[in-house]
Length: 263
Image (cartoon, rainbow, N blue to C red; front, top):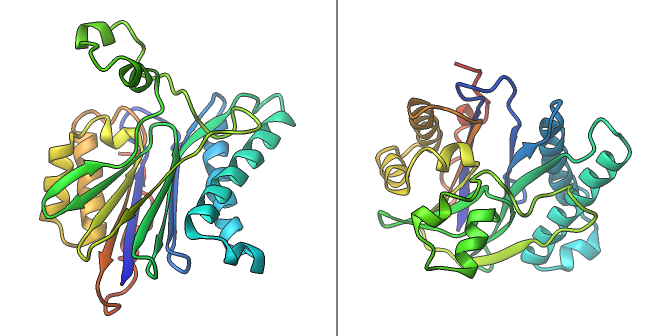
């Protein structure tokens, strides 16, 4: 088995800066989406540090790290990213308080498992046989409230602010990272995305767009187009990873790796 991937990011229609960041590391089967937060462009710095720290962790892995399981290495990489962001913010009053959500994934062909680590409300979805399922749980005030009180109504939830994140990288010296493993099947497609996508495009529409666009880069573009058509209120990032039975196809549609400019 192998994974092929494509990614795309867009500033959206209302923002000046793109504080989202994504990386594709085909040599390690690692993929990351980070959505930065903080004033004075600090969110852009936080998401950039997160992406580069996770990439650096895998690229500089020594023998000891290679002996660790895929899931353990993924969690350690995200934990390392948190430390890097927190240290950078702690050294500068300008960047103090900056942070970023993150959803990071690693595919293990040997185990036939797809590992997902996350903090915040950037999400991972699994699309299989035309169905879509959300693999991550948002770390947000509303999601936490529903976890404690599943009986809350929409009227109850209307009193809660919808943009409050309860976990993120860089906010403190340590962070609780959720990690899960999903056994894969050939044909599975995983979507990593920021809330600029899932906040404006519902799950059924996401599934339809991916199903209708076999080329992953095209599907990423259509997802972003749809979010922009629905208002584009935030930065929008989509990374798609397809699990294939053979290694005949190229690892990525190269045209999908570049970020789009503002519209």
